[in-house]
Image (cartoon, rainbow, N blue to C red):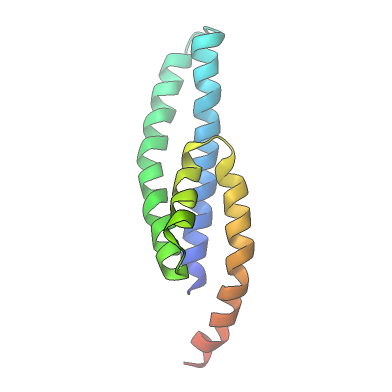
Length: 112
């Protein structure tokens, strides 16, 4: 597996995670604190998170298929972008697991 596949996933996991945390804070500000301007902020961040979550799904699915994960693990990783802060923890666990595999494949790619 190429390092770029893991890197794409990691970037999108962080982007999705940050946007979801911002969206959660925006919803709290809008509904619980009734802050002015929270409505527009929530709308913009919600739209951005929605579209970028689709990109995250594509990259996570690509990573999972190349890593030959079982379906349950694949679903777990795909859903991580829907739970605030879960994407950070799942990304870290997946990265640690796959960095060794990427390092194994790197010398084989370099020699070819």
